[in-house]
Amino acid sequence: MSNPTRIKYLKIGSALGIAAPIVAFSCIIIAIVSYPAFSWTNNALSDLGVISGVTGPVFNFGLVASGFLGLLFAVFGLVIYFRKSLVGKVGSGFFAAATVPLMAIGVFNESFSPTHYLVSVVFFTLAPIALFILTGAFGLNRQRKMAAFTIAVAILAALPWLMLFAFNYVPNVAIPEAASGLALSVWTIVLGKKFLKA
Image (cartoon, rainbow, N blue to C red; front, top):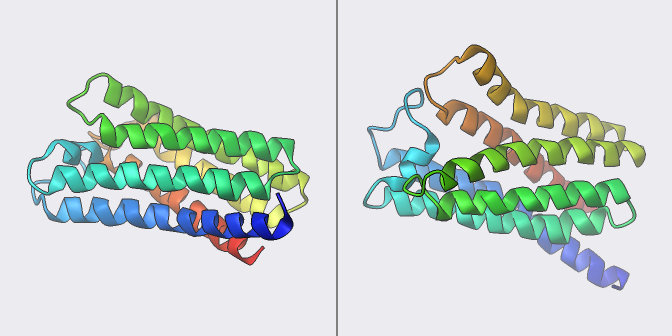
């Protein structure tokens, strides 16, 4: 792949990476607004996916679309950026793998038990692992600021779940889901902007 072509794909992938969390959280917000009975403490975000009317379809579409955009970001953004780094390629592969269960959460809503639970666990496990690996890639490339930022986000993405298991601070999982997802979203947007400038 020639350098101009590589840069073209990198920019396309980066733009899609920035769009992914925007699509996801826009749809989540619309779904929450459309369902006043939703409770941050007593519900899971995925409860929105089985509500009739506009709520369920919008919520599920947001997960599938953002997962697909995230996959393209991994393939055309992360993989190209880390093309000379084995650790970077491994981390990019884990990130790409994490986008598949994200799409599956939207396809297999809570009506599909236990599939929905399993793909949810896989997503929230793989995504922080991908960031921990990519921390190593940035470190090996002597990009210390990006390494520090990435490991901080990985910790923030994992911490809500570790605290939930340790302290059971809320009766349901909407808050840790949103907190973890928001951390991952910030990282994706920052990386997307960085790659656009590369």
